[in-house]
Length: 419
Image (cartoon, rainbow, N blue to C red; front, side, top):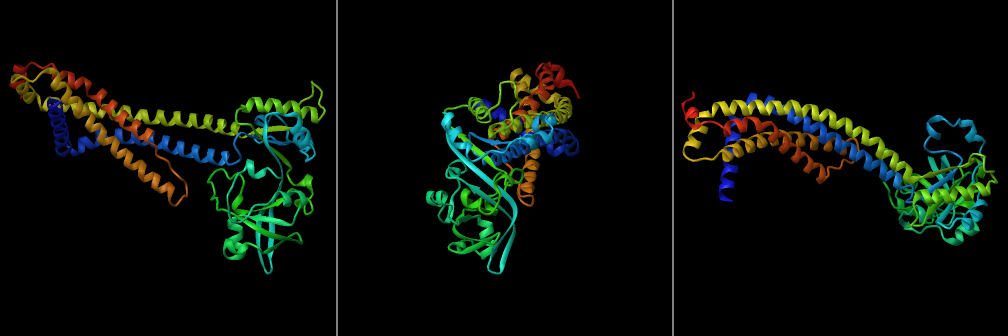
């Protein structure tokens, strides 16, 4: 153990001397490693962060949830299905929920939703614009859970009787009343309808890429009261269905498809006139997309690492030539070939690690830049850091293996006599 530590200390000391004595040569050699590590780790970090942010937005749409709609949220099979066929499809109806619930055993929760965007909400002389209004049924909050910061959520009685009560998003409440907590008990006006504010949703924050349900800037009403203000067929009607925990998405979709075809009285040869938009499908699509992006980052980074590896190898060849007499002297006093080999390999790995460390510092600076002004959360995982260290050590060992082998095989007499 002591001998190993001595070899490590000697290798690090010699590597540091090499860096100090040959700054320009070392810098040019490390540059390739630095750029390679920056490309690989930077791309992996950025892509992982993008993927995580997007998936968080997607997951906010509900876990194990399928949206029954006439529109296909994925774009309709790459444009193969003309948009005018979607327009002709029937919209989901509230009355269909009872039949769907009775014929589908895998359902855990189900809700009917209506929504309109860009509405004005008035309180006395104050008004806010571009508000999203949601009309929902009883189980909506079970599929789309959120916390109430002030007051309460709509009760079962509010839902069944269609009471003129509402829950406001935090940002809307703050804009309209000065502070969110002051919204409780106030009356707002939407389309000349007076509505009481009984609760304020806890601030959610906005996703950079996927917004999902915009709870910060919304007003939630009961489905029955919503219908007294807006016409249902022009309010994007959707049925949200959440499957039981032990049911796979594919099995759930198959069961729902059979039920809906029966509801719509479709014959066996007729194509579906509805879409089943599963949240998990969006996550899978995101994973596949970013896998290709990661591959591109690897290819760019590996090219830079190959250049860096040749630079490190060049340093080690020059180092072996400069230290040839010292190598001969060490072997003459009893140093074994494997000790010489270990010293040069460790030195090569250490030099490469320094280049990688500079690359990681650049990645951290990039993370700070994106996390600050751009309001984009960047996640640098321990797995990625471990990968960076492993790549540096591997490149260093591979780059130094040939010069280290040459040094280990030197004849001590010939080495001592060399100049």
